[in-house]
Every structure is written in structure tokens, then in C-alpha cells.
View 1 (cartoon, rainbow, N blue to C red):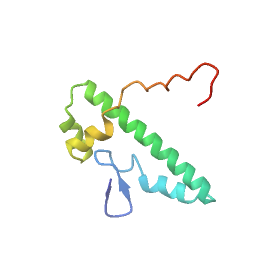
View 2 (view 1 turned 135 degrees about the vertical axis):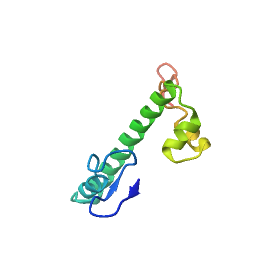
View 3 (view 1 turned 120 degrees about the horizontal axis):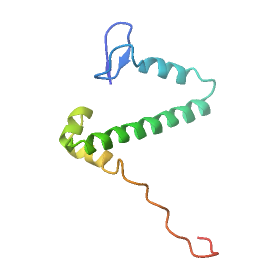
View 4 (view 1 turned 180 degrees about the horizontal axis):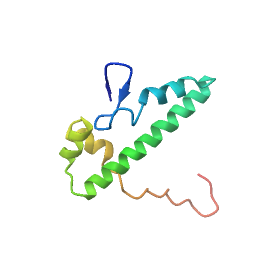
Length: 104
């Protein structure tokens, strides 16, 4: 994210100004009536954004984009991109089996 001059506020690179108003979303979260609600809302947004980014990376990789290409788009190193999104698009790992009738 970058901060642009004027009244537009923060925006996402490559997205036309006005299409996404990060400052407006932050203002809405900050305007919530209590800290617990702000925290749960902010964490839900972070989770949703991380899932969305992971999905985008998985689709880009499926189209043949290299890890360096992903890194260049994200503005991070290739190693960071790989560490952050290497499992993107992978099926979730099921929980381990529990012994029959027992608790652990």
C-alpha cells in the first residue's frame, strides 16, 4: 500500500484510485463502538485478505508465473513470497486421527 497525496488516501497499487478506499475501510473499523469489536473485525479482515491473496497467488502460479514474478508483484523477495504463499492452493491438511473412544 502506498500513501498518495491529496484527499484520496491510501490505495492499492495497480487499482484505479477510487475503486478501493483503504482509508474508508480503516475508518469504519476504527469507528466501531468498542475495542473487542474492533479487534474481532480487524482480525476477520486480515484473515479474509490473507485468504484472498493466497487464492490470487495460487491462480497466478497455476498460470505459470514464477515465484520471482509473484515476489515482484507483491514487492517482497522471492524467498519471502515462497515462505508466505507456498501452501496457497494446497488442500487443507486433515486433523490427525484420534484413537477410537479416547480423548487426547
